[in-house]
Amino acid sequence: MAVCGFKKTEWLAPFLLVDIRLRRLFALFACIFFLCTSSVAPALATGRETAVIDFQFQPIRPTSAVSIREAVDVALRNYPTIASKRFKLKASMANVTLAKTQYLPNLNIDIQESAITGNRVASTVMNNVSGFDTVPIDSGPVSQKSSMRPLVNNLQGVNLNWLLVDFGLRHANDNFAYADARTARADVNLTQLDVAYDAAEAFLEAVAAKQIILSTEAALQHMRAANVRAKTLVAEGLKPGVEAADWDYEVAKARIALIKAEKNTRLALVGLAEKMGTATADIDIVSDPLVRSPSQIMPTRAIDLSSHPLALLKTAEIGRWKAKQIVLDKAYRPHLWFNSSVWGKGSNDGVNPIRPVGGGALPQVFNYMVGASFSFPVMEYFPLKAQKRIALNNEMAARADLNLAMQVLEKKDARARVMLEQARKIADETPLLVQAARVRELKVSKRYSTGLTDMVSLAQAEKALAEAEVEDAVAQVEVWRAILLLSYAQGDLKPFLDIVDIVEGRASRK
Image (cartoon, rainbow, N blue to C red; front, side):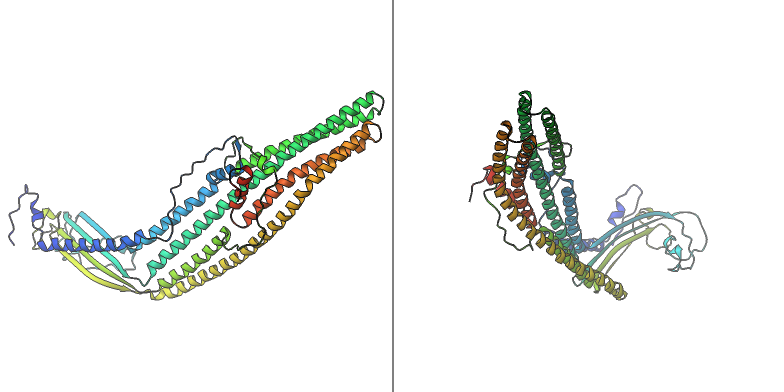
């Protein structure tokens, strides 16, 4: 091979000295890398977990007067716990992508330029000496004399390692990442159910508190009317003067009861705003649809609760630990690697008969290596066995948690069905209670006006009417609360919200 004369001004000449075989070797490595990455591409594209929609936590503010469906929707959009769970789900999905990168080969490129002294003696560095990590490894013949004149050296290398056979370890890691993502997704669904239920429950509590205000205001009006009648009778000499003072006492107690009811209502609205994720917002509620008895009641028969988000979460945790055991089982397998390297060196020490290129700044000799290596972690058997025992016990614990969760769900379902049945019966009776109390109050009031009864009887009749009206208002809300509790126990609030839509007239009756 002819070599042209080298001049300082001809800076491109060193590149023309590269042998054509080296170029072919680089082309071979490029082909190998292309085949490796193309074989991994299908693995990166496939997946058994649906993609997570890009989610940015940006709370929204509700309207001034919210309905129960709007309260639930705002809570699902605003509540920070849901945002936290969703971001954790996105992290687990990123872990799935990370697990798939195991199929890629390792490709390392190193370039080193240095100025070193060439003083060498025959010696070695033992592996158990700390200097093994701090003393650079040098090469070359033993020096005839010591000199501190620096020599220009260079070293370039490309190393490719690809795990060809692992007997299912990477696939097991994929499955474990998928199992972890399924657990995170089930956790998101359970959190959404809890947040929606808490918002709806807080809304019903605010509705009940608001109804108590209306009943208490009505009781206050009755007390004031009785007070006026008593003072009229006292002025006419038909009643002793002490009864006027007694009625002032009763009116004051009714006003205090109204103030307490207003306080409870405002606190209930603050609690609702917190459950909606807008604790600083001043809101009101649209309570009219939920003070009437629902025209449609959910069936109270028992259903299969295995699809409840809590049960799905516990089942996903069992699958996660089973996948972990498979990973540990596959870890005790031999590995077959494809190894290849190409590297070049250069120096201007003047010892090597091959002429230096670029004054030692560019490689003057090249080498390559292609081979395979086989590894087997023999002594990893014992720690892996202990880790498998840990994973197995964790799986058994997760199964026990699932059994406990199913018992809790079955208890909640049975309890909700009983509460719904009894709440409906009470709600059917409370209108009769109010009617009887109103008739009694009217008759006692007439008897009091004619002097046939005393102030105590009339006061008791007024209190009984107020209590009956409060109980009737709360009884209708309790029916809705029982329907909500049954929907929550069965893992889906949609039946409850559908009944609300029917009452509000936004959905057609089936």
